[in-house]
Amino acid sequence: MNIRKMLLSLLAPAAALIFALIIAAIALWVVGRNPFDAFASMWSFGTTPTSIASMINRAIPLYIAAIAVAIGFQMGLFNIGVEGQYLLAALFAGWVGGNIGLWSPLHITIIILVAVFVGALWSGIAGFLKVTRGVHEVISTIMLNFIAFSVIAYFLLNWFRDDPTSLNLRTPVFPESGQIPDLNWIFTMFGFSEPRGIALHGFFFVAIGVGIFYYMLVKRTRFGFELRASGMNPGAARMAGVAPKKMVLVTMLISGGVAGLVGLSTMFGSLHSYTQDFPRGLGFTGIAVALLGRNSAVGMALGALLFGFMERSALILDLEDTPKEVVQIMQGVVVLAVVIAYEVVNRMIEKREIKAAAEATRSVDTSEEVTA
Image 1 (cartoon, rainbow, N blue to C red):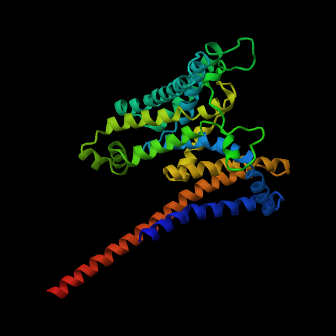
Image 2 (image 1 turned 90 degrees about the vertical axis):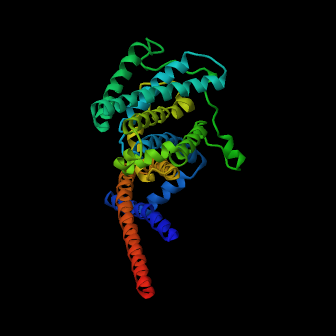
Image 3 (image 1 turned 180 degrees about the vertical axis):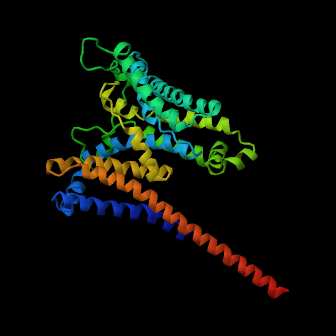
């Protein structure tokens, strides 16, 4: 029965991916491009060492953003403010990191702690408003996003700017002690050629650590049990002694703390400071990755890698006069199809469980009648 349930669960993402490929093929056909040739080009380009490094670099922040969102999802909270939280955290972490010079492990640790603190503080505002004034977290986090964007613009222009005469607004560049070495040696270790022009970000291992932390927190701690119980049945959790307001506040703080790490991969790996063109949109895409991975640590990792692969492989479409927006269509369809497919599969599993329970009840009643 467990094997059948597992196979049904695997059917949902597989069916969603196939459906997305069909929709993308139709879109390619509409614009006059052979779908098979386009998919072959994307696969060939996306599986080179350089593309694999780029894919992983793109996946790292998406994975961390998805975990930040998933922590809230576990309790039925929708932290839609990851975007503002990670950008504000990156700004302050970039400013602190560029103005100190310490022993490298300590320097890097301080940068990470600053990012976690700022992200948690900004998310905690939404949690505080919810438990004290009943403000829904979706409303407060959306508003806090726009406030964060304005705060970033003000501080970057007036306080944290490295060179007042430069048109390129940025915080001071990290000294060497605040930079994490790249991981290109992994490719040569396994017999592959090194990526050209792209360095595999060293923050990769931190992302793995965040994934392990998420799994242990949710699946192996009392807090994780109370978190999931509050999400599934708040009333029952409250009757069991779980303090709902405390859980909301702590959950938002942890979610925001993780969100603060989203921008550090790019900061440590390539930019070494916060710039006016710092990558945006990662928080919103992280929501899609969390939905795609069904809040599972492994599932979200696979979803982030899928998004990273599609974004990287889409670059070859531009060179072949094919609209790369086809990939955006694929991403949207994958998420939508996965949500629908999982709901269908869940209903199938529920029907099977109800049928099995009914059959078990009938067999028990029959045995009692025979005994009587």
